[in-house]
Image (cartoon, rainbow, N blue to C red; front, side, top):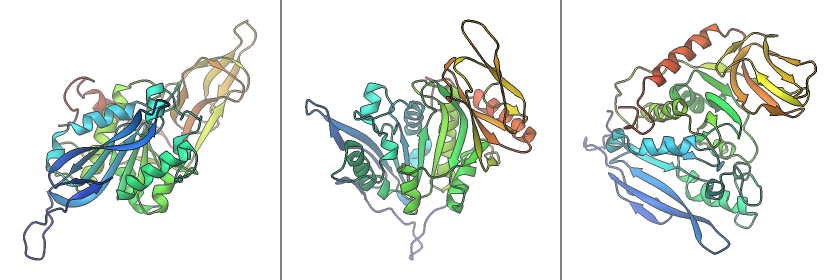
Length: 357
């Protein structure tokens, strides 16, 4: 482990870390309750923030999940991360927030009570809507304290995502984090207006989004890959020491992606699995009528890797069916996906010890 030396040649010690008025001493863990909202009964809804403050100075990494309240894989990723032994020898500070959108989480929905999307409400304001106020509080009390960030997501309800990183690759520090995470596919993604990612990048905080799995479902391979990826990021930032695992694979960069949408209403039959490599013009699905008649075939508009898929058989015209990361040559990407899947499947079970030793 690289140690930080002061002018006297002695190892430099971290100063106390403060969050929302709570003082965290070096080498300790504290759970800080951040008040974000109340129920109608005036029962407070607090957001627990786990602060793990190392004995030595270093980056402040924010790892957040469930900013969309029904996206649950990240909650489990952070639970396992907090049990990992490498946090006992930490440089810098980890801010782990398992559930940002507490309203959505307790109601098993993506949105806030007023149907606003919290991840379209940043930077927020002190006097705006409920979403704006929650975003403002989270930004000023938590995000502004970070030097780097990883935001954990899944696909929407009835849509599954292949483990992937989305990032603004024009920022060199962000691109390095995306590569270090260790999934085979990285998509150069436009910064959405009002997102945590947009606000973080605007104020110089490199941030990546991990997308994997489906809303309201645990996906074991996505969870294992997420834990391993966050640990890879911490090693990349020199927050933790050497690891006994192979170096993360070099990801393949998709500079753009395409959505395939339903051309008519009906019953959707997918013919390809997540992670499949596709040729332009390849048959990838059909839409039929439940009452008979001719099928409508669905062909891939480009070559690439299938990184998102609708899992609901009943679809309406215009509904998103597939998300394809565009690649001209995809065979090498497919080989990396096979290696990645094999590595993840060799990990321990859902209820076992932390998956990365």
